[in-house]
Length: 279
Image (cartoon, rainbow, N blue to C red; front, side):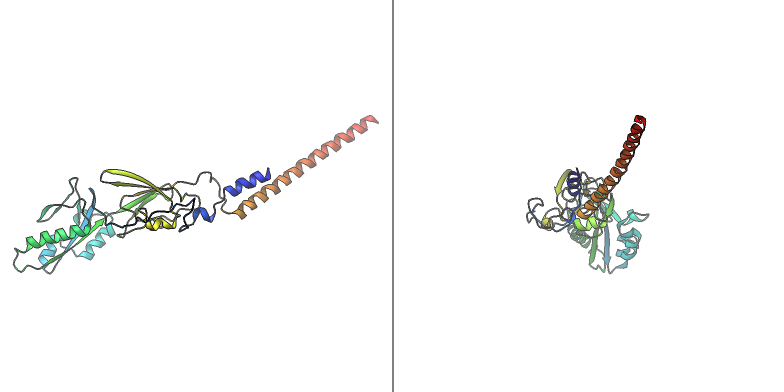
């Protein structure tokens, strides 16, 4: 019985093997092919773009930037979070894949990167503004705002993507890591692109994860983390398991001693009574 209990406790231990990152691939930890090739994010319907036009002509700057400076606008936007001024400085990619830009009109941006949109706007504005006396070249800044990813199952929440390239490790760190009792070997990534939803499962413990398609996350990704089956109480090392086993054994001995003492007293009492009745 004791050995069976000990086996159960040891099998329930949360070992370093189960929780450490950057481990060498083997039979239990998969090796991912060298498929890493970071690609710039391509704009999708519903994205919002922050566009700021730089020009030596103050009138041009005011016309395209609602009279505000780039630094002031960023502060008002709160680093990409929506507030009262949010819609004034961002452009929504509509259901047809266009943004509506002042003096230019509808511009198709769906499927383009921010760099491609930047070049496209600079070309359009350059052609348009050449007709203005004293024309000076313009430069355009384009960024995607209000980008985020979600985590469910552990440290659930929605978190901002505040840099161009965010890795899975950075995403998990923002959520406070996974904790001891959450599975690292079967993380699911739900991603929607071009109207299609894909679900990918990967083992984040593998060192080869940095070379895989799972390494970088994208806006609107959902990361699902499930609890390790069978972990309903916290035994996180062999020493803890042995301590629990020793405590259980001691308690069992204590109970056995009390019960056995009671039985002996009963036997002694009835034994004495029987002898007295015989005399």
